[in-house]
Length: 80
Image (tube, rainbow, N blue to C red; front, top):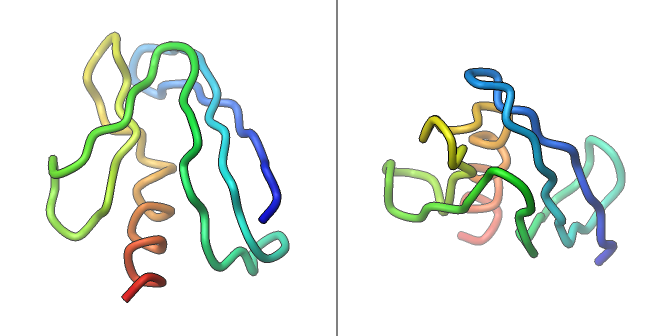
């Protein structure tokens, strides 16, 4: 697995931060991602919505970060 980071900007309140992942695969073919850590104005939540393993949520406005819902769903599906 390779360690990667991505910048985060909340589309609702413009809070910023970044996420660090361990991932396997290349580019769009990434098969599995594991959340390592979140930095800045974001936190991880589990159990907030059905069908996803976890969500990335803004600390300032409590909104779910929409760009990461698909990643969480893909992780859950790939582990079945």
